Length: 89
Image (cartoon, rainbow, N blue to C red; front, side, top):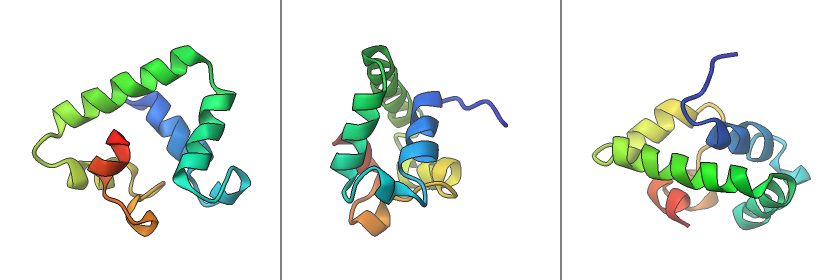
């Protein structure tokens, strides 16, 4: 398995927001709540730092970069949102 530059985001998409997402909930909010319940607060802080770092690194191509990095695991588009909105909500 390849080491991720964003391990907490990879955890969220690989475990919680994958093809079996309905185990955790029916909405992104419910699924993220499960991640938060199951993960230590330090991981929540790491996730927020990763999101900020990802947004800074890809400020001019966020949607494309998100799709390249996570498109095989997760896309926010079927949920009615774009990567920028998903990451900032």
